[in-house]
Image 1 (cartoon, rainbow, N blue to C red):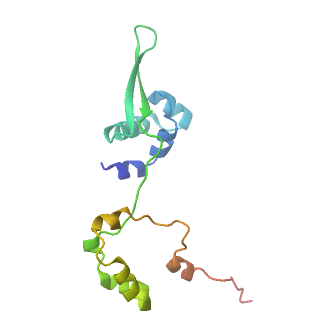
Image 2: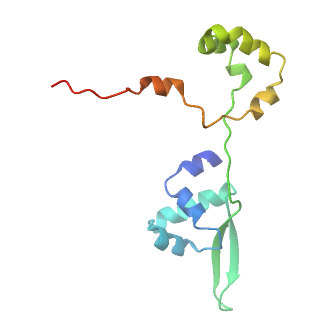
Image 3: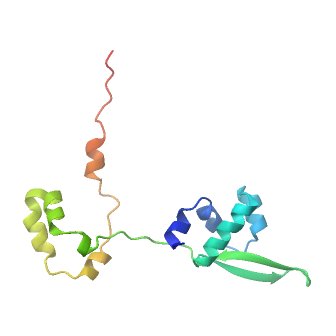
Length: 140
């Protein structure tokens, strides 16, 4: 399973949030109210993709307890166009009259520059904004 798919599974984020310190699967299951079998599966998936690591401790000299701790405090996901899948005709349609200025401004840039560009979360999605009604009217 891919790391992004693992993060999207039910309970994965809760488990990662609760494993800042080494924690047993039993404790995770009880404290997060996750069925024990599901908790074991999620922990195994998170361990397999590298988001959790096993930490074995010798609690009382005879009983070894396996605990899990997250390997990172943050995960970032960046979305960027892939130049071969993002032809300039799409840019022309999306930008309209400003397309020549836009395409001239990015002409000659490398694909690596496209991949490193970030998406500004503060910019409102114009398609979503156009679909929202300005007001709700009642026809009574």
